Length: 230
Image (cartoon, rainbow, N blue to C red; front, side):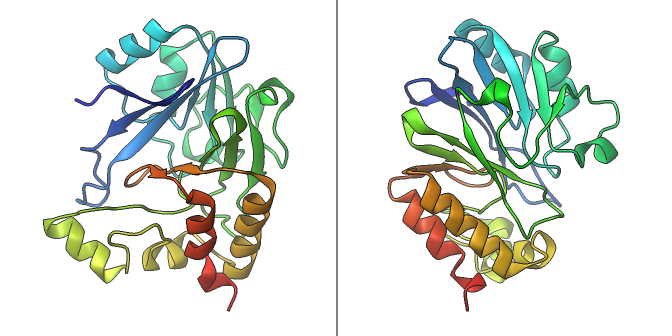
């Protein structure tokens, strides 16, 4: 069990490496950010164990839970229950996936006022099946993009074979399956990524599947969407 891992001042992740999708150990990731007022924002909660929750509580009060993507919905109800005093922000399409989720405010085209001291935000356009919001944390130069890309490194066995079929091994990319299943408009998605890269001075990219991309993430993400500019 990995537990909390500090990436920067006021920025932590929990790597859920055993999480499987369709029999593949793709893993997933929860992100935790400290707000200027001292409380914490939990972004895209994964399968948090009691030990994870205890570590998070040890850092301080979780004032906000953010569900920025409709596909990563399996654990948001449990997270909202674990932190009943937290305000829950979620993309509107999550209601159909998780009708039991308590949503205090929907995520629209611009960052909610209650999060504006911590994040800047842009929607990932051309990806209606994902309904993703990209979150930029300026003080750590970090972009949180749940499914904006994959960064699977050093995979073995069935996962390596599956990622080979998807042209997704050992690089930051949108996989072949992701292009066909996540994105409904490649050009719009590429324009949206370019807009985020122009607007946000990020050097680190936190994705859910694979490794956190450290150093040069803005250039790498732009390159990962070159397929949408042809």
